[in-house]
Image (cartoon, rainbow, N blue to C red; front, side, top):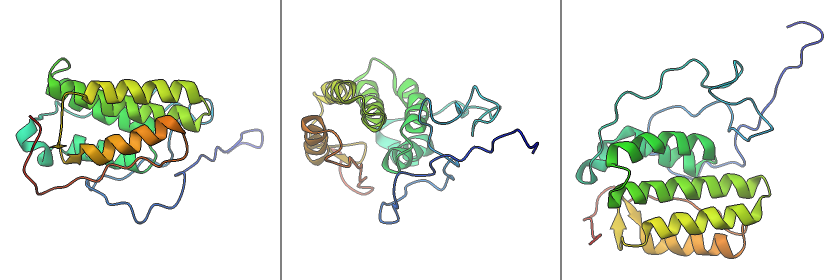
Amino acid sequence: MEANQVKHVYCLTMQSQADVPRYSNRDFPPYTFIPGQSPHPTRDPDGHSYGQPHDEQIEFSVEQWQQCDAYLYGIDLFNHDYWWEAHEALEGVWIAAGRTTTTGYFIQGLIQIAVARLKQHQTYTDVARQMAAEGLDKMHPIKGHFLGIDLLKFREDVKEFIAEPGSKKIRINLALDFEQTSD
């Protein structure tokens, strides 16, 4: 490193999260991307994912969600404050689920709630509230448990976040062995 170069140090995670379960074996990126504070992951040569290939074609079905590593990794990223990265991981799942299907809208809702958490961290409170509310709206027709998520609990957490961003740490705790009840 030359004398006039600055070595970048970025936020690795927002807090210690040893008590948060993991659902995927994939490693986390070396930092969580916060726009304006760290290199863009894919566009900046210093980005943590620069030059790396995207996930191969993702296969996803409601009945087999537990086998979709991209979905499980997206949930891990979401839960461990890698919000932009969660958005990227879940976008492939959203496309595979069908963007305009009920499941597609549900995944899009998760993406919007991840973005809401990022915006709240950036202190864009009004945008965070709007994104979280829009995310919940996308999930509206689904009840019970869906894709491993207890929607009653998740909705309560997101509504508390909307009421007072930053007051509630939204986490997704997947139930890996239950019957889907989403009609």
